[in-house]
Length: 561
Ligand code: GLC
Ligand code: CA
Image 1 (cartoon, rainbow, N blue to C red):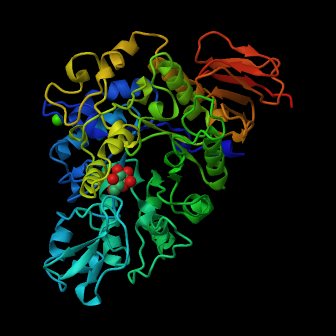
Image 2: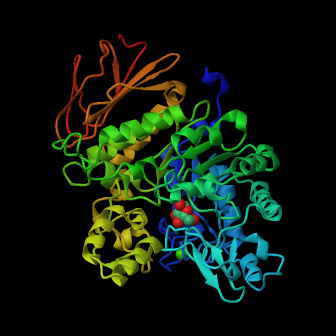
Image 3: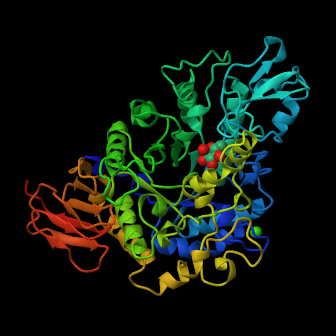
């Protein structure tokens, strides 16, 4: 049984910080490393174990640090290498761990490698990137995530260069052994400093066929999913593991862009020696407004699809280990999307989603701010947005005289900036995030929703989150036990059993704003109720009658069948 084989990162809760938006220490409106240091006691108090920082490296910030111009330097807005070293020491002094973002599908066009590369086709760095020389006529169709085409013409080299993201993010050529060596060297630099792992950005996209053959549209109707199927992908990941990862006691989690269930185990199967975990794009694929399976549920998406997705992922990892999340810096706030941010439901829904993430099998990834129930800000002007994805799409729609108003309405639900507004510390101006002008607007709901207020309230989302972490920590069964979905077809509730060695846990969740009934199909006589987000005890019988967004965690030595 897995418990004989306990591993720290399986038991960890990962707390994701978007450094730009967490805490500003010097009043320039941009969060920074010293700001994070000043909040470490708060982070520790949550009970989380690992801090993941979105990129903190030198960058011209075309894509908020995902365009790196120097992998071994700190972005000047965020501080200095001394600040980083201090942060790492302070993190470790609190018995926490720190993981960084590894962004090696591409660099910035301002990285010295690319600056050299574009000097001439003969430059030794030219082969660090992917090019399509003008002699070969128009480059093959490759769409970009942020622009129309993933090819941009460079007049100097008389060639197009490839960028799956923005034109300021040219893709590295992993076919070139020198590129791989340079990346591994850089990884060692950070591991030797003592970091505890990497979250690997867009990692399935690194391998490419340099001949760029036409994409098989039958196999990949959206074109993009073909990007995760480069010819030598798994050889590279295995090589990286052998040469670097295996030498350190660290954790890795890949961003599983465009990876299907069938392929997950290739990344995370322990015997394959590639990555520890991969997180899928499931949550973003469970589209809003697919209420077809229960139009009157009060749920703006298909819960049935959500359950199927999580259960599918749990299986797909095989002997590997799942990563669990409902939101991150690329997706809207989980409460607005999968819960309910209306005032009468907000607190219950936030606690219910927390109950879900912390009682599932897998390592939970938690975006800072979700522990107080932060919501989408509902920006209504394009000028409020900062994200290149939103800004570029808006420009394209304007250009073709499309409906920009409709687009803005959709962005209130989908834009990545929804999750990037400043962290809400207290009810002073700018939510205690900065004494200056924040780089992106603070959600005006900060006067109600902030850490200071919730610290004082024993029933707050924040304190409930802490209790859940304590519960998870108290029982290895809750971490390692298998997961069985009990109500695949119920459109409003999500019920699952975690059958551990000593205890069995039954989790019953109402994802809807209406009363709902769950039928776990097992005998709950004598079960002990460990958590309920309503404070008082729910009605238990063969059926569990649940109030809106009610969450109940039960434990028993064995549930009868
Ligand atoms: C990943 C990151 C995202 C970034 C993109 C390009 O998807 O999470 O924020 O824009 O890669 O690096
Ligand atoms: Ca600052």
